[in-house]
Image (cartoon, rainbow, N blue to C red; front, side):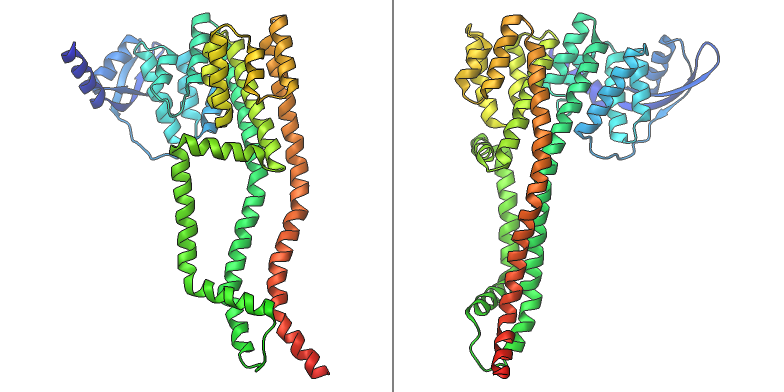
Length: 411
C-alpha cells in the first residue's frame, strides 16, 4: 500500500497541463486543455472520447491575477445557468474556463475538470482547493449530487454567494469612506507640519515678541514631526502590520476586536445586522439543501464573519445535538434579537425553517441597505466638521501672530 501511495504521489507531481487539438466524428476541429503525465496519456484520453488527436503540446502558463471570491461567485452563477440550460457538466466547465479573463481561474477550472474526467465527483474535486471552495460550498454541491438536483443547488448556491458578496460590499463601502478621509487628513496634517509651519517659524523668528500659546504649541508639534517623522511613520506602519499579523493568527484578539466592533456607536449596529443576515442566509441555504441541522451549523458560524457569532454557533450546535430546539439554543446564546427568535420559532413549529430564516435574512439585508444610506449622509457633515476643526485650527494658530502684529501697528 505504501509503495502504491508513493507511486501515485510521484505521478501526480509530474502531471502538467497540455493543450490539444483533435477532430471529432464529423471532422470538426476542437481544442482544449488537459492535465496529464505525458502527451501519450492525453492522446489516449482523447481517443477514449472518440476524438482523433491532431496536436498535443505543453500548455503555455501565463501569470494571472489572484483568484477572488467574486471570481468564484461568477463561476458558480455561470455553471448553474449552463447546467439548467441542459449543457453537459464537462462542456460547461470548458466554456466557463475559456470565457474567463483571468488565466488563474482558467487553470483552476481546467484542473477541476481534469479531476472530474478521471472519475472524481465534483464535490471531491472542489475539496482539493479549500482556499477557493469552503466546506459550505462543497457540502452543498455534495448534497446536490446525492439528491440528483445539482443544477438547482448550484443556482441556490450562486444566489447565496451573490447576496453575501452584496452585503460585504455594503459594509466595506460604509467603512471605506471615513477611513479614507482620516488617512487623507493625516497626510495633509503631516505635510503642513513638516513643510508649511517651519516656513512660518522662520518668519516669526524676526517678530521680536512672544508668540501666542496656540502658535507655540503648533510649532513645538511641527519641530517634533520634522525631527522624528521617520520614527512616527515607522511606529504607525509597524504597529498596523503587527496588529493585522497578530489579528489573523489570534482567536483571542479576533474575539475582542469583534466584540468592540459590535459595540461601536453607529457602525456597531450596521455590523450586527449584516452578521445576522449572513448567519440566517447561510443556515437557510444549507437547511433548504437537505443538510442536517447539526451538520449545517458547522459552516454557519464561520460564514457569519464574526467570532462572537462563531462561538455562539458552537454552543447552539452543542445544545441542538443534545436535543434542544434551535430557537431555545439561539435564545440561550443571547446574540439574536427577539424578531429573529420569533421567526425561527414559527419556522420550527410550521416545518418551514428555511423559508422563515430566508425572510429574516431579506429583512436584515434591507436594514443594512437603509443603515448604510443614512450612515453616508450622517458621516459627511461629521467628517467636514472634524477636518474643519483640524486644518482650520492649524491655520488660525499660525495666523494669530500676524493678527496680533496688525492690531499693534493699527493701535
